[in-house]
Image (cartoon, rainbow, N blue to C red; front, side, top):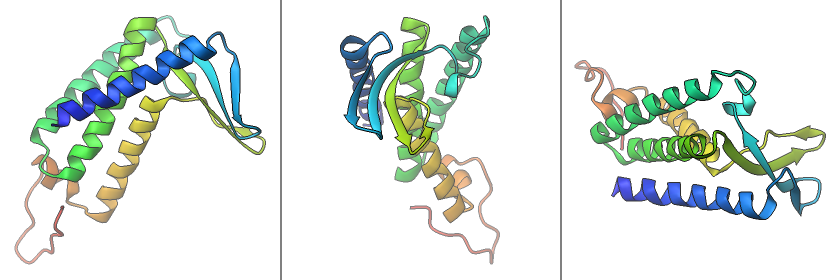
Length: 170
């Protein structure tokens, strides 16, 4: 079931990026909410916020790193014990795979969601980036709420000592 959800999320990500390429393309913008939200097509050759975009070795490095992270996340998904852990991993895997597909297909990641908050223009992003950010945010929240979350969910840590309070992870 998890793989089906991952495939659906990747398809939605790729579909929206394809729409942005075809309908906006070429650095143009379409205003949705004036002064706040617009659709703006950008081809990001770097990592988050265009880090490494000016480096010749950047694309190869990012493809290799993304592939390693993606395979590690898939391995953890097989071991995940609870719904919260699976939800985090599904979001991280889907987002990572969506951006990796772009890098392999186009040599860059398609970004198109652009928000402005007053005078601050938030970096343009895509649905895959949002999935990665939400997955990471949920992981942080789950770990803060349950310090044993990682070891319980992925079977990587120790069980609670006798007398030590262990919160239920699900």
